[in-house]
Image (tube, rainbow, N blue to C red; front, side, top):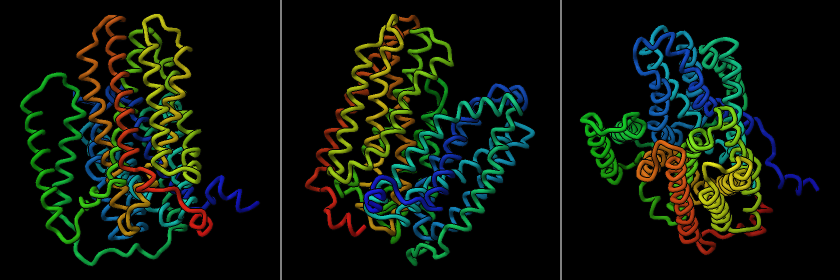
Length: 470
């Protein structure tokens, strides 16, 4: 009976609680700050673009995730995680006290660096603490909690801002960060992860940070037209990333072991992560536009209509982990993307200027449920096909591809919307239909590549005796 109960949920541990709470703190901070932008603009903007407060944080995270993931393998989880929490908390204090927009943006860059360390160490810490089915369930619980945090962020942010002003969205991080640091110091093992003796790949790290930073800035640019600055960013991004790729085959201890991508299962998992963010972020942006500009719903109701996606993803996150006990990972991931694609296709067929909002609920639930089922197995495959001493590197790759996928998804699907959409309700609906149709096709591509690259022949279901041993 006890053994059966342990298969339903991962054994609760201080490490799992710490990772979930810390990740939730970072996820909330991604979205909560956006709610305070009007007040920040009135208080400290000084004529500058207040949207930079969100962009600087995102760029710092996207540029650093791969580097800090690799450093986690070399320097150990505990010291790097403690450093990340300390940096994040102190930067939050600086942001709360910022006297100007420039100071606030600098604090957000540092805060994003700390957030990158926290996020990237989540999977390695769980991988070190758990094994077998327990690891899969722990990763599922972690992902579900992160979804809940993102779901609650707007409500929490609104309450804090109304009660205490925009400074509160940064101030709330200070007591939570201190508590997380104390817990981490108590529960994380003191034995550092043994790493290679060779010195870190500093040149490769710098090239990757510059390349990803330039690419992320380019994807997040608000302008609709292309200018000389965009061309410069593109050249910097391509040159730096090309130099990084060449260097990785020449250094003894690379920041990213590119040979990992010769493993079909690893490449399939990374592609699934990328496509997931393209669909989730890119698709949702234009669906919200349909709610507002075609159905003429207010911001509150439009936001509530997105809730079924997150609720379904949260609930089914653990389902995907549990299915790994019965099915091969590729079949579970394929099922998730099939369900997500069916939801997107149904939405594409149903959206119209006069569609009742409640008609869209079932397709929205299917979209979210598919993402939840596929999410944890993708992470599990990426971790399980990699040597334990490289889990940090893999976590960095997952986070980096997720960030890049979100940017590319928003930009690429935006191009689709611009091609088919317009200003009036009918035109908006046409553009969103095109976006949803392309998203459904991309889900089909994800199913096909998953079944080929992560086929049951390559990555079978764990044998019964392996489960028992775990």
